[in-house]
Length: 514
Image 1 (spheres, rainbow, N blue to C red):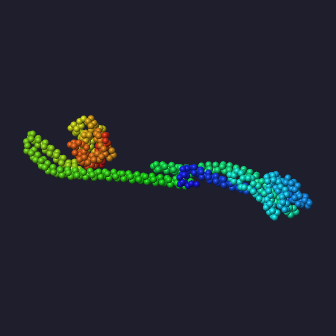
Image 2: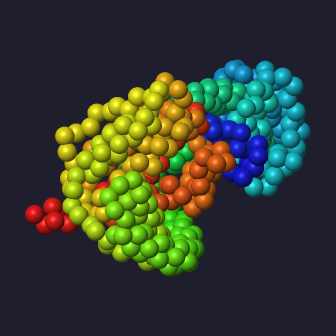
Image 3: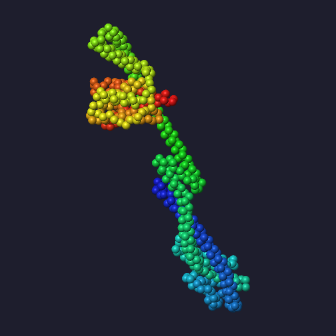
């Protein structure tokens, strides 16, 4: 018998192994029971035949003694009574082998209808001494699968007593062929019964074991395969025998623990992803803040260096303007003074980057600033050969910031969209309102950007334009202006599909409180 860990045993299924084991156990049990039954029956039949032989021999010995006694004294010697013995033999049942001896154990007469019959002098001598019937059984046991083996026989030896003295002995051989025939018939019945009963028992045993063991284990195996495939929602019915039910309960507890562990792991991974995203944004903000601080320091230094001589120029031009009469010369002085003051304002804007502040903030509709920037550029002919369109709402929630700064943001975005759009292309505008505030987008039909380019477009002095067409400060300024106002700017793009810049505005404090 092989164990479950044996490679050969594992090639058979559980059903096949259970059926094989049931067959072996049931067959062995039934054959053992049948063999035991046959042996007990055979022993009982032999005991019965021995008892019958003893009783028969006692009758035969008395009959023979009476036959001998009828002859009188003249015929006292057993040798002279041959005729009477022959008469006695004729009265015996057929198919018996027998023989007789006198008081000296000398054969007197015999018949051997069952073949050659020889007297056993040892048994005869023992009977003469014991004066009792002696039995010798010659019977080979019947095997469970034996076909032949001889019928067997019983040799019975009985003393012949005449007036209390030993006058001779009679020895008879009884055939046991009928016992053998009955045993063979019983064996056939036992084998048939064992086959029938074994088939029924194997069938019921196989059905019960399949229902209580094989099927639950099959469900467990199928559930294990589903869990291995990732389905942690698998639940097995807790039923069947106690051990199978406990196993199903343990399986359900295991899948529940795995599901909880998966949820915790997924939540932890999501938390790590959010943390990494926050760290990435923080790092980008720190890098951008460092760059903006560098630009601020540069702007402050330049504004300081330019501001002093520029202030003197503005003062001298103002004095010169006051001394000139009305006319062409005064008009030139007025224009020069205006240009100098515009330069002074630009210098002040540079100082705002170094030390940002609230400035001249106001609450207004950001959509009005977009329309103003679009109209201003259209009047200047900036969109020649292009179309600027889009579905815009009537108004948006108000935003609080410096209006001229937001105007500059939209001017930069519109000019960038113009620069990358092909001739005959379109710049599309869109706007809307979400829960957090309002948004405005500018879409172009350019060649788009890859991820590496998008990661640096808000950096100062980074540009994709040809030399002489840009300094890389436009989007940097836009990002700085919106960041100061509490908003943000985002970009979406793929190579070959253009770019979409979306400006997000927070709801105005005054409007939110209202």
